[in-house]
Amino acid sequence: MAEKTPKPEVTFEAAKKRLGEIVEKLEEGELPLEESLRLFEEGVGLARAAQEKLDSAEKRIEVLLKVDEQGRTKATPFDLRPEDD
Image (tube, rainbow, N blue to C red):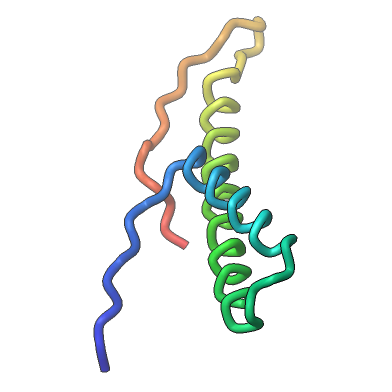
């Protein structure tokens, strides 16, 4: 059995751009079924990766905007490492 090489991490911006390209190709309706399915699968993976990036950014913002009982901003360290699922 061949080992899978890990895919390089994609940036949010790159995922968004590639998703746009995939949508354009799929909307044309000229691709063979197998190619359409391959692109759809790639798009789902990119959408999930982009959502994870957004979720991570949201968590970081929430940490940065926390306030204490007196309404003062409370500095809370956070871990920049990606979470393991």
